[in-house]
Structure formats: C-alpha cells, structure tokens
Length: 458
Ligand code: 5AD
Ligand code: SF4
Image 1 (cartoon, rainbow, N blue to C red):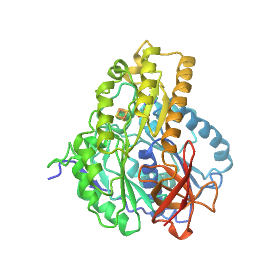
Image 2: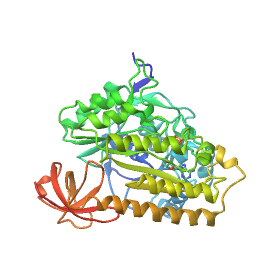
Image 3: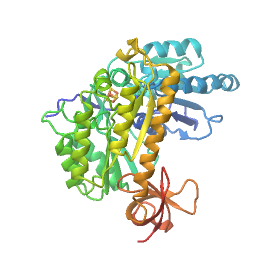
Image 4: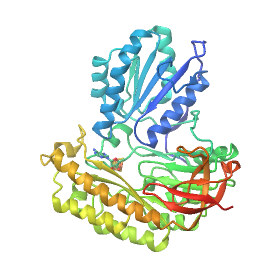
C-alpha cells in the first residue's frame, strides 16, 4: 500500500487558440527547476506550441524563477524590466512567471504591482495547471494569478520534454523537511513526498526504451526517500531495484544529506554496477559551531568520518560538495576550519556560495550578520583552495583509460566529442563521431582545472 496521495494530470492539453504559437522558457536555479521547465515544455508541446530560443519572436515567454539567493531574484527583475517594451510593441505576447520566487506570496504581490504587464503567475505546487491558466488568459483576455499555499500530493503523468536524448533527470521525491536555518527551499517546495517506486521504475524503463542510457535520481535529500511510503522503501533498496533495469547503463543521484547518508547506501554504490562512483555531499561549513547554528544535525567530526568511510569502501569515488561562507556569526576561526576541511577532504569539485539573507528564515533574524567585504574576502580564499584541490584531483586522471558516455560534439570544438567519466568528470576528446550515445574508452591525455582532455582508444 502506498500512503502518498498521488494523482494523474487530467489535463487534455487542448489549445483553444488554434494557430501554431511559439514559446521561450528561461530557467534559473537547481535541477528541480530544470525538471519543472521540461514538464512545462512537455505540456506546451502537447498543446501544439513550438519551442524557440528566440525570446523576441516568441508568442509566450516563461520565466521559471529561483529564490535560493538574492542574486537569483535580481536576475529575474532585470529580465522582467526588459520585457515591458516588448509587451508594448507586441500586445499579444503572453508573459508567465513561475517557480520558487513566485511561491512566496509577498513576492508575487510585489510583481503584480511593479510589473502589471505580466499575464500569468503561479507557484511550485500548481504548475501542472499551467495549460488551464494559459487557455483562461486566451479566453478571458485577463491575467491569472494562482499561488497554492500547500503542496498537493504527487502529480504523475505530466509529459516531459527533455533536453538530452541520452541522459535524463528523474525526480524521486519532492520537498524538504530539514529546515536548515539559512534556506528558503522548505518554504517554497513543501514537505518531503516520495514517488511510488513502481512509477519511478516505469518512467526509467520507458526512458531506456527510447534510448536513454543514464539517469540521475533527484531530490533535495534523496537519502530520506521512502520514509513516507508504506511499506517503507529505503533509498538503497530503490537504487538496487533500478540497478536491475535492463539496458540502463548509469545511475547517479543527488543531493545527499550527510546526516542521512547511511552505510547501506555506500554499499549499494559499491555493489550496484550501474550506480556511478560519485557522491555529492554538501558540507556547508567546516565548523561544528556554525553547523549547529545552521541546523545541519552533524558535526565536523561526523562529516569527516563519513568521508573516511566512503574513501575506505570506494577509493575511486569523486566527492563533491556545497560550501557557504559568511553565515551569521562565522568567525575567522570558523572559516579557517572550513578551509582546513576542504583541504583535508580534497573535493573533486565544490559549489561555493556567499551566504544570502532570505526573508522568513531563522538565520535572517540573527543580529550577527557578517559584513559584505568580509564575506567576499573569505569567498575568494575558499575558491582558491577548492580550485587547487579540483586541479590536483583531475591531474590524477592523466594517463588513465576511462569509460565515457558520449553525449555529443564538444561545445568549444565541434571536431571533438564530449562526455563524462563514471565519476562525473567532463572529458573533451578526439574520437569517432558514431560513438554518440555509446560507452567508449578514452585515454586521458591532459587535465585542466574543470575538465579533462583525451583520445578515444576503443
Ligand atoms: N545563501 C547562500 N547559499 C545558500 N544555499 C542555500 N541557501 C542559501 C543562502 N541563503 C546553498 C546551499 C545549498 C545550495 C543548493 O545552495 O549551499 O546546498
Ligand atoms: Fe535547504 Fe537544507 Fe533542505 Fe538542502 S537540506 S534544501 S539546504 S533546507
């Protein structure tokens, strides 16, 4: 029995405006937003819309917004301002805003006041209703604003228009229960909800039948997958079930929370041949004092022990992370602990962030905010350490032969191919153009800080 309330998108995707129209979609933020955009795009294509990369010529412009840091919001305002003139010139143009930033009611109200030319605003919980909103705007010639306060169950069956034909993101759970004190995500994405494992398996089998070779299982905290399902299905069990799908070559997953990454998951990575040796394990800070204030529920020592366990069992694993500087109350000593931890772990790569105050989060109310110049100075020092570690880790690949899933021509040089190692390293290499979509062997000839160069050998 599956407890999670779940329903199928009932929309007929009819387009009451029968002329062939085009849409442009811009997405800010994480893979969750990317996946939501692929669903919006999937629904629009079912309605007969065509995707365009030309914003100026599009009949419908959608901004899928992010609010995890202030600069993500500032970008949206910048882009919106530029649309005012376009809307005056093209009154038939429809502008829609959605995503995490819109899920905050005060933000949506502010947008309506400042940018009255926006036609549709909706949040993260009701994006499956977008076709309805679009038809309503066409029919009634008036705007639609609908922000749903709470999450609905899980909506299955929404068409997805994926960017790649080789690798795909598959969401296994929505929402987050962790309430890290700096983070807005639990307020805009709701509580944790796991998808039924049978639906996940069916989606992946369907992708494999279409030629997809690699999937990345997505969730804010994949390690707590299945806690809301009856019978309970743990994340490691899910990995083992997916590993049995014939024709699938690679499985990745993100994001893991250090407090929930259990040994059975490390064992599943080790034992399942399709699960790649890559673990994204956000640390956020190297100081136990700051981790406590962040409500992360692990100490520096516990985190390092976990890294030690991973390295012991899977020495070749790439470990990546998210690190934040300038959390309220972070002293120079706290920050130096972060630097030391980064050096000790020797991350393959790290996403580095400057703490950004988010209205409504507990950390925003702390009086010990760090001055901007101190935050920036720490950020630069952290980036230097992290980049040095990445370069060193990459250099260790020189001379090795790696299995690469070929994704297509290289972005910078179309005579070359591009793909990734099992550990997630980007490799540009000379090879056979017929290899796209296949697993090949590549000899790594040179390492740069952020990518590898090589030559196909098989
Ligand atoms: N300020 C800066 N970075 C943040 N993140 C989340 N909230 C904030 C914030 N308020 C970072 C965390 C998280 C990543 C996705 O974004 O490091 O892991
Ligand atoms: Fe935000 Fe923490 Fe949840 Fe990640 S685990 S989404 S940082 S609250």
